[in-house]
Image 1 (cartoon, rainbow, N blue to C red):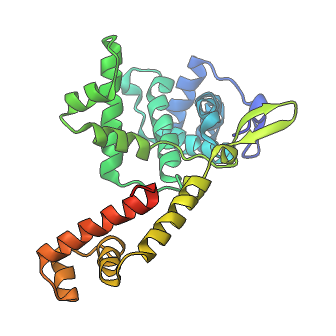
Image 2 (cartoon, rainbow, N blue to C red):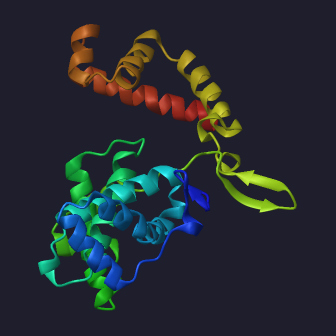
Length: 259
C-alpha cells in the first residue's frame, strides 16, 4: 500500500480539524436530523480514519479500499454513538473503524479460511497477548497448554491467518540487483541426486522376477494391501509378505552395489 496525499479522491492534506467543542455541537445537530452537520462531521473526522489506515500500510492492500472500509466504520460509529455514553466520539469510533478495516482485509484475503479456524487463531492471539503481559515467553507449547489443544493445531491456525506472499516479492535489493522470493525456491524433487536414484530404482525393478515386480507395483504405486494383492495374484498373504520383503532386499543390494 502506498502512502498517498489523495485517497479515494480526497485530499487528505486538506482535511479539516475539528475541536472537541465543534465535534460535540455537530454531533448534537446531526442526531437532530441536520444532514449538513452530518456531512461536515464525517469529513471532519476523516483524519481519524487516515491515522488508523496508516497502521495497515504493510498489508499489501489497496489504500483506497482500506480507507473506504475505514469510512464505513466511521459512519457506523456515528450512527450508533450516543452522547449519553459520556466518552469522546474518537474513543468510541476507533474500535469500530479498526474492526471494519480488519474485516475487509480478512474477507478480501485470496485464501479462504473457515470461520472455526479463524476463531481459533484469534483466541490464540488473545492467549499469547496475556502471556506476554505477564512477561512470559509465549511459546507454541505454552499457548497450546493454556488452550488445552495440540501444538500442531496452534501452528496450523496461525499459519491459516498469515498473509500470503507473492513469489515475486523482493527479499533483497542492492545496487539495482533484486533478489525475489522465487529465486530462493528450489524443486528438490528434480535434483540430480533424486534423478539418479530414480534411474537406479527403475533399473533394479527391471531385474526383479515378474511376480515380485507386480507385487511392488500393486503395493507401493497403487496402495493396495497385502490381502488385496494375495487375492489378485492368487497366492496367500504370507507369500505376498515374503516376496515383497525379498524384492525390497534385492533392490537395496542392487542400488548399493552390495553382493
